Every structure is written in C-alpha cells, then in structure tokens.
Image (cartoon, rainbow over all chains, first blue to last red; front, side, top):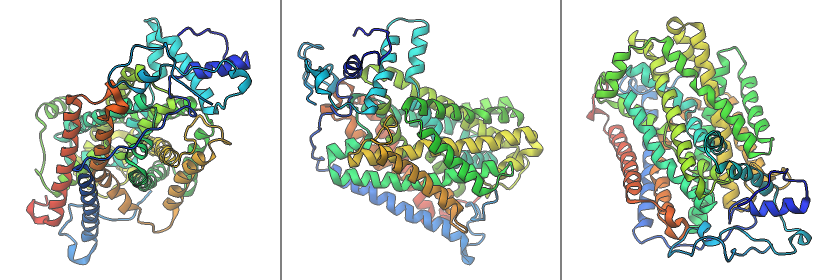
Length: 89
Length: 477
C-alpha cells in the first residue's frame, strides 16, 4: 500500500479516506462483521460446568484453609499456613 | 456506512481463509466524502498509529527496530502487570521461606506457561479484531458471554483491592498516610486514562512498569552466591523441608502470580485496541516473550532479594510488602529497602491501571458499547465510567476499617489459579475455531502445550484441595 508522508489532516476528505485505507479490513469499529453462534460440542458443556464446579469447590476449600487456623481448635495445627494478622503499613 | 470486500484485492480465497484474507481492505464508495461516513474517534486515532507502522514496515536496520518499538506493548504490559502486588509478595514469601533452590527454576517455568497461553491471545486478537469477552459472547452465546464477564469483573475487583493494598503498603514505607496513598494511586489510574489515546496510555504505563526491575539491584545488594543460583537452576534443589502444605500453597500462589484469567482478556483487548493485524503476529510474539523474560527476571530477583531473611531465619510468614522492606534494611541497607518499597508500589500501580482497563474492555465488549482507550469521553463514557468505577470501588474497599484485606491478599492468587482452567478451555476452543482463525488457528504443538498447561493447573489445584481436606497427609514442616 502506498502511503504519502504528509500530515493526516491536511485535507478532511483525504483524512477520512485514509482512516478507511490504513487499518486492515474489519478493523474499523463500525465495519466489524457479525460472527455466527456455534454450538458447543456435546462433551464440552459438561467439561465447562465441571471445571466451573471444580473452581467453586476449591474456593470453598480455600475458605476452610484460611478459616481453620483462625479458630481456637486450629491454632498451631496449621501454623505453616500464613497467619491472618492485621496489615501493618 | 456500507462496506464490501475489495474484489481485486488479495490472493484467491483458500478453503478456510482468515477474516483478513476474506475481505482484503475496506473500500470506499465513490462519494464517500459527501456521504460523511460515521468514523469513530477511536478509528481515526488507530489509523494514525497504523500509518506509522506501515511506514516502518518496509526497510531494515533502524526501521525494523522502530517497527518493533511501535508494535510492542500489550505483551510487556500484561506480563509486568501480572507482576503485581500479591505476586511480588508471593515471590518474597517464597524467597523468605525457601531461599535459593527449587523455586527459582519453577518461577521461570511459570513464565514459560504464561507465554504459551498469552501467545494464543495475540493470534486471536490479530486475526479476529475482537476482544476475548466479545468473542465468547459472539461464538458461544449470551449465557457464556455474561458468565465470562461476571467471573472476570469479580476476580478483577478482588485483585484490584490487593493492588491498592500494595500501593498503600509501598507508599506507607515512606510515611504516606493510607488514605493519601490510595487516593494518589487512584488519581494516577484516572489521569493516565484521561489521555484518551491508547498509544499514550500504553507508553506511560510501560514507563511505570520499567520500575518493576528495581528488584534487580536489590537482589545484587543481597549478595546471593552465584554458584548456588546456578546449582538451583540446574538441579531444582535444594527444597528445604520437602513437600509440605506450605510448599503446595506457595506453588499455587506462584502459578497464580503468573498465569491468570484477566491476562487473557487484557492482552487480547489491548492487541485489538492497538490495531495489530495478522501481519504483526511475529512482533506480538516477540512482545509477549520480552514481557515474560523481563517479568521473570524481576520475579526471580525478588526471591533473591529476600533470601537474607531465609538465611537469618527471620519469620516472614505474615509479612506484607512494607514489612519486607523494613526487615531487609539490615541486609540490603536503606537504599535497597527503599527500592523494594518503590517496587511494591509500582507493582500495585501498574496492575491497577491494566486490570481496571481489562474490566472496562470486557464490559464494553459484552454490552456492545464502545470499548477503546482511543475513544472520546463523549463516545466512550460507559467504558471510562466502568474503568474508573472498578478502580474506585477497590480503592474505597481498601480504606474500610476492619475489611478482610489479609483474607483477600491470601486467596487472590490461589483463586486465579483455580479459575484459569475454565478460562483456558474457552481460549482453546476459540483459537481452534478455523472459521474465525483461518490459517492462524492452533497447531498440534500449540494445542499440546495449551492442554498441558491446563492439566498442570488442574493437578496443582487438586493436590491443593486434597491437602486441605486431609491436612495430615503431608508433613506440616
């Protein structure tokens, strides 16, 4: 593509043309094509939900991990876990 | 405005061409000047940036370096953005707990994993010109689109809180009151965005991000034994205490410090906003590799910087950023400690800028509103409102008395690790979609590596879960 070196806004009409020419196709915010939907494969949906449930379960476990050392019964038992103290800044 | 493919442009279509191959350049109607087609402000600014890239694409020597300079940005920002407050604290905890040994090569490996994942987002963004959330919404429907955005915004809010904690901790070392420190951080985030120019925003943020390397001189001041460092990289040893609960928590935290869902969304959106095309993928890869390399150096330097705390058996398990700096004064001097505090502040600040923008990008992409840092305030006000609100809410939360900040700092990286497998699955589905990716779809090797990273993350999470449910299965020390 041949592009001259003069400033972009010397001529308003020319500038508009260059806005169209310089970016690649489908790059203008108003010229993007619509993508059609695709159906997820039969095995993919359970996998997505499975991974999501796994993440939620693990987050609950993290809560347990953090909460346990904070309880009187848990003191010292999980001393290796970072202790929940106040932040001193 | 009507656009149509340029009939004579480009090579003859292949069986499954990419969008760029399909449409060539966008042609104008003959009376375009009179019609006054709607060109958004972001298009004008992006066109200006693209014109500079095109001018420098031909010719070698200095021009090729200039081309690289013009095209780098998203990769460096995402990698250094992920070297954020909680990440640097995780690395510091690692160094204070394990010294020079297993974790040095392990951290380098995690950045290799980050490169594998992030490189896919470069190709996705360049080939489709769409952000990650927009693509999920477009291809898999409203339900998964909103789900992905909600996950991201929630995770980002938690992470942003930790970034402002880091800002507060870093400036706290210099005696700045918490409210003033947090407000200063928020003002910087807003000021950088108000440039309303992606290029300016990117360069200012990169200038801040360079300060991530202040951990390197601190590492030298700590006088690590070079033979020990080489030995650690060659043998992945020593591992004091062996595999125990703390080891697994730090493994999870260090993975979460490198590979997280917001990175996928941010880099793809930034690639699109910057205007990268398929011709720029090679430079996008260099950008990502550069970012991973610099971030790995900063992360490893942080581990090395705090090894005196391990050597002198200083109990650092509950330290936050500023406490590390204070504890390091006897070993690296006041200058080293000051640099460490600056590094913690920078880590929080750069991440606050990048993560808040990733929330705004995702919101705009899913809601269909303008989503560009090139937008004018009038056109892109929802984007800017979300961006500032994301940072503002996090800043306010940090200042609420008795808010569970420690809890958030502890869990944020681990949650990131756990949330990553579903996010990578979407990424793999999209990057293998030949209808939108064409020739830039994943190769077998890229799929093998991507699936490998996912399996590793799931296994790390499962081991963590098992040791949580059965805490006595592993020795505690």
